Length: 212
Image (cartoon, rainbow, N blue to C red; front, side):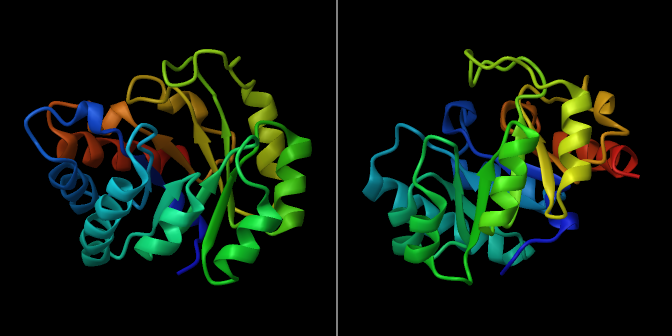
């Protein structure tokens, strides 16, 4: 399963710290059932074996909704769980090594916070890029927000899908209209909401206007 621009519209990223009384699988089901188009499992402190088990469960949920699933950084968890691919940052595993291990059929997304890195990612063969952080974010406190003009230039410089990431929620996402992004990647805006399903439906509706 490869990606297209439409599958980037609402790119949900998990964080079990927001689950509360629900399980991560229950939250994922709510988010996907209500329109999220892509899912990244990003559980930085989860032991590898536990991550693999979680990914196997989530993969089955995502299959119901025909939504691609990638794991953040852990190539071997991708191989062992059989999910659709991996997302790697600039400090994670080298793309060529990742592609060699995963083969041509798996999705490899890359973080690319500049025009130069976006072009390089496309040239290497990345399936999509995540560009940001576009707003201040508690997830990566040392990150300076990406200028929206730079985001626009990234989008116009490459042909693979671009998803904006970093500090995005329902209150600021409309500011991204006109940048030509294909979608937004969000964590707390969905998984931190009182009703993740409703939050997803609202964001999907907003994003259909943002990407026009």
